Structures are given as C-alpha cells and as structure tokens.
Amino acid sequence: MNPDLWLVVGLGNPGPGYAANRHNVGQMVVAELANRMRATFKSHKGNAMVAEGRVVPGGPRFIVAKPNTYMNVSGGPVNALLKAYGIPPEHLIVVHDELDIPFDTLKLKQGGGHGGHNGLRDIIAATGSADFVRVRVGIGRPPGRQQAADFVLQNFSSTERETLPNLIVDAADAVELIAGSGLAAAQLKVHTG
Image 1 (cartoon, rainbow, N blue to C red):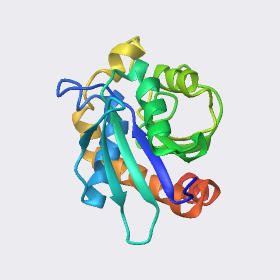
Image 2 (cartoon, helix red, strand yellow; image 1 turned 45 degrees about the vertical axis):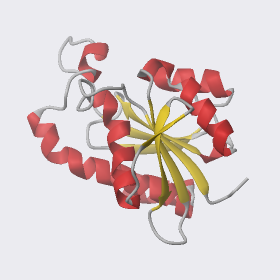
Image 3 (cartoon, rainbow, N blue to C red; image 1 turned 135 degrees about the horizontal axis):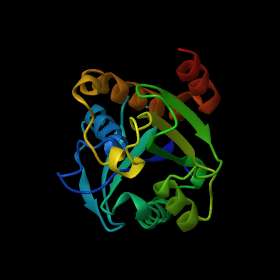
C-alpha cells in the first residue's frame, strides 16, 4: 500500500442534465480537485472518469473519480477503482450530499452506516467495508412537504449558488487536509472553523 495514494470519489448522477443538481455536489468537489491538480478527467475501465495527480509537489497523490453510473449504483465503479489501484478502503474518501446537515456546512467522518444514502449503501455493499472517510456536504432538508428525492434532483437555488463556490472550495480543502494531516486534524479545523 502506498500511504500517499488516495482515491477520492465524488458521488452524483451522469450527464449534463444532472450536473448542477444538489445530488451532484460530490462531483463538483472532485472537479475542483482535478482543477487544482491541473489534471484532465479520462475514461477508466472501472466505469468512471478519473483524473490523477498531486495538488502540491511532494504532497499526497490523488485519483479523483466520478462514476459513470447513477448515484444508487456507485459501488461497482468504486470497488473496481480500489482494486485497479490497489487502494484499501481506509484510503477512500467519498464526497457526497447530506440532507441532515444544513446547507453550507461540512462534516467529516470515517466508518458508520449509510444513513439512508443509497450511494453510500451501494458502496458499502460492493466493497464489503464501511471503513472509508466521508466528506458530507450539507444541502439541508427540503422545504415544506417536498419529497427528499425530488429536492436532491433539483439545481441549487439562486441564493445557494452565491455561496456554493465557497462550499466546494471548503470541501476540496477538507479532502486535502484529510490526506495530508489525517482525519482528526481535518475534523478539528472543519468542525470548529
């Protein structure tokens, strides 16, 4: 195992029709990381688009990935990428939307259940492990009686879009902190910052 190698998966749905949805915030974050690495996404046989590189010379090496599948069946591509690169689940960081966290808030954790998130559920089932790091990007609860499934498949509101770029940068910073300084140090900075 290479201690400096990390797989970072941004969850979402494929295609331009979903690109700006709340459910795709994970893919927005990995796009930011790829941009920082000056890396281009390329097709991978593991049914994902991947970009590889380092954000800073001598820093951790990242494989950032966007599965080509729908959110609810993300496990197959994630498992294929872990195997292809020889990365253990402990060096997997999954970036995903989180209804139970207010918009513009991040929470970091390792392990645990799927909390009703079907993308996480499928990754846990496919990899046989829940022991990966999650960067949970808060999107808040739907207003009124709107169904959660409809809410996550809508684009961010105009008000949210004003703050969204900062949230994406903060989430990408959190990924870098986890890989460079460890989860505990990243949690201290993100949760109390």
